[in-house]
Amino acid sequence: MEEHNFYSRQTVLKEIGEIGQEKLKQSKFLIVGAGGLGHPVAIYLAAAGVGKISIIDFDRVEPSNLNRQICFTREDIGKKKSEVLCDKLKTQNPFITVEGITKKLQLQNISKTINSFDIILDCSDNFNTKFLLHDFAWWHSKDLIQASIYQYEGQIQVFNYSKDKNTGCLRCLWNNKPENHCVQNCSEAGVIGVVAGSLGTLQALESIKLLLDLGSKHNNTTIMVDLLNLELQKIKWKKLDDCKLCSKKISIQDVYGLHTPFYKDYELPDLNQPNMILVDIREKNEIVCDDTYDHYKIIYLPLSEIKSWKKEINPDKKYLFLCQKGIRSSQIVKEFRNQKLTNCFSLHGGIDRMKN
Ligand SMILES: [Zn+2]
Image 1 (cartoon, protein in one colour):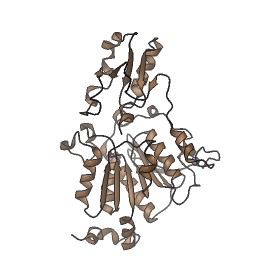
Image 2: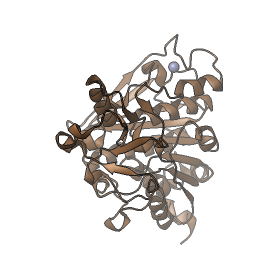
Image 3: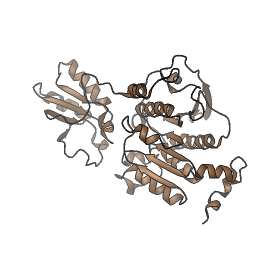
Image 4: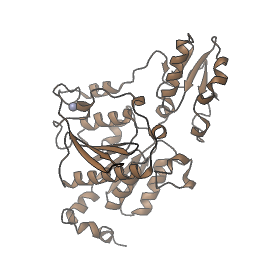
């Protein structure tokens, strides 16, 4: 098969043509998150002939992912998401370069990770990653397409920072990052795969349009999609005169400062706490086969069975509670502390923050 045949149906479009196709071939896109949004994004960008696609995700495939992460099969359970999705894209299109990055995007590695890409697609599912990615994309003048879903609804935002950084930013809309527990994630709120698929597909299209300069621009606009009622709305918002990110000249150190974690007095940053009993309060079905923490002595006491083990907490010992994202563990520790059990601590950000 020849490469030009692969794209023949889209090069017929006068807005794309051979010139647009070459531009796609020369471009580098980074997909952050190999989940429900990341799958259609990756598949359509590979099919369109984006020359280099990198996918960053630290997670492994779980059975509950399969209803929306459509490139995974039962045989992939337990494998690294970024690697499985990469293999799928390599089979799909032999004319592009694909790279899987199995690490967590975080403050220490973000500048280096995003620097070589033209367009970044934020397919993550949490505010920490979204704000981190946004603020550094702004600083490095990278184009960013963010999408998120909630039950039957979704939203998309297109930031064309390579061309214009004075149009307003995410911080004009949200001065401070909302706490992660403000919005439920897919496991708590529920999601049907086709909603993630629809939003991811739109997100991929917006990224191609942005690269090829097609269609209308969406500066200062949130595109809201209600798939239950099949309605689409564009909501315009204003650039803030006193925005902490885009209104004044700030240094890269300031951008780092916006993301330096703030620990509460009952939180600890990691599991290296020699005099503490480590207690994982996740439910049994959440814990996947993972040897990352084998060298820690962790006991498992699911939160749903708290009534049976709560009375065993010994005021003379120290406990560090952990869960997936650090939300449930901090709630339970706050409750214990209200009962004068100041010997209880919570792992900041949970297991997810530890992975890299
Ligand atoms: Zn702003």
